[in-house]
Length: 220
Length: 279
Image (cartoon, rainbow over all chains, first blue to last red; front, side, top):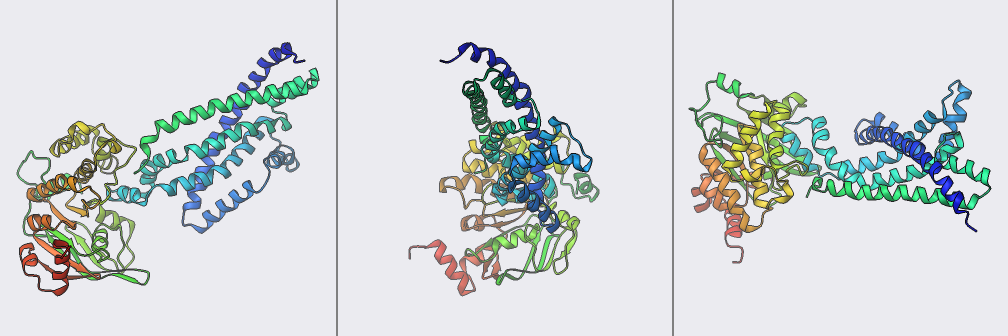
């Protein structure tokens, strides 16, 4: 029998865990991650071998190791070298470093997808490469990178559940607590899954809106 | 070079109100001089010692088969391409010797003196027509916004696109896009206009409106170098036509002369192919 009363009673705490834990964690990590990713993407594109090498190494290390391990290294590992970081900052650091590694390749590809002619058009109106990048190339690359970056963000929203393992009170940790207390594991975890699903559905819809809004940015 | 520098040089034309008119009146002085331009891409020698001289107000048209190096010549004149050797100088700017490394400042100084219209308009797709036109004056030349907008609006009006100023490039026809491309170049008030096959990517029925604008600019006294396959345009607008083939200038002369009595066999054959493709 489904305990509808429990479903109703646990809905609000779960949603609250999502709204005050999952979503802020994902947003903060994504924003920081994009900054890292843009830097790494530019280093990858640069002709400077050292910068290029650093970015390659970073991207390879991030993509080649499990997110859970990255999280544990920062939260449980760093205290061994005298660096104790609270759960929330640890989670944000780990997730943004992770997003930085994945999104770097997305942004790099998006920048390279803007036709070389657009760079030349910038040069012939007297712009420096930096201004051309900022004013002309990145706005066009942004449109191209919306779908893949949305994927990254939606993955991140779900991955934040890993933060429960380092004591961050986000939605999944709330679910674990209710489940342990009520002993209704299947019911509570399915309820949590549905709320994740709703979050991601809303995000996908937002992605479509943003894509439409930016459609005119595509060079033809 | 700012408009005030030009005033100081005493070369401002009599106060005119036509926004299409160039900042400097035509006279006999040489504006652009290129000597011995050489360029290879790998083993492929694209340009073998090209000489070019353009006087103020003169229209020089480069014709020739694909791969003859016309576009590379044009792109060498504003530093989009770095020649392997030779010199380029534009009056009032540096004389660049490409056999030595070129500094950034020199490259910008060369670029600032010309503006280019591309085969594919290369408008910025994320900006409106007006934003496209004022981007250079505003961001690069630091012209006050009100002035940049006023000048851009006058130029757009002059080519019949005033009502399109808030449209995005994708909302325009090919001919309109290319006319905006021309206005974007004019807004920079360059001394030299470079046209790289400005009508080659257009549907045939749109070629006329673009050539018309370029012809008007020529009549207004703009100095320009035009790469084109439109021999009719060359005949009507050019002061000098250069026929290029295999990276060299095979023949040069006044259009009437060159089209009527080509001295070189290669020129004659090329003209025949273009004028009578089915024979």
